[in-house]
Structure formats: structure tokens, C-alpha cells
Image 1 (cartoon, helix red, strand yellow):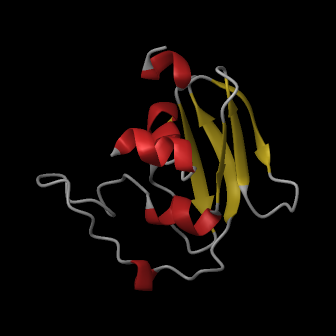
Image 2 (spheres, rainbow, N blue to C red; image 1 turned 90 degrees about the vertical axis):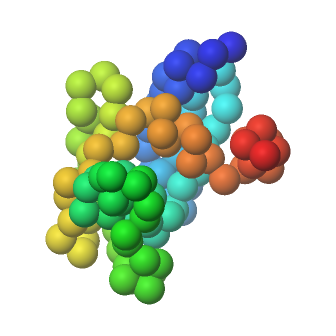
Length: 111
């Protein structure tokens, strides 16, 4: 299965404890992400140098209690978060969110 078809969400919502974002993908895989990890992974130009791709945002600059105030769809390909720290310019394509999956299976594929 290609990454594009793997990166089609069948459902997106809060985790059971209400503190994580859970994405179930069309292939049945489930990704669970914390707000802090999502905020650190923001791909916008304010968080990642546009020329080098190097992360500018440092973990120490993000409060561990950060949370999304609002989550919006961007077309049929991405999510955008308005964060409690005032940030809101990052667009997270579904393929990118799939690559952020922290599970052992996905981590072994990435290496």
C-alpha cells in the first residue's frame, strides 16, 4: 500500500482520556499523538527554517501543557491547529501526520 493511501484517515478524534488526538487510517492503523508532540512538529515557516528545513522551534519554548483550542480541516488533505500558546499557522498534511506516528511499527519502518 502506498503512503498516500495509508495516509487517508477514516476517523479523527480525541483519545479516550481526551488529552490526545487519535487518527484511525484507512488501512486500519491507529496513530495517537499528544498535543505537545504535535505542537513541536509544527511544519510552518515560523517553526522550521524554509531554506534549510532545520527546526527553529525548541522543545523548551513550548509549554508541556499546550493544547489545541480548535482543529480545522484544510481541504481534504490536512489539519490546522489553533494552539493555546497563540500559534496557529501550521498546516499538517495527513501524510505528515502519518509519518509522526510514534508506535514501534512505524518507528521501525522509518529506520
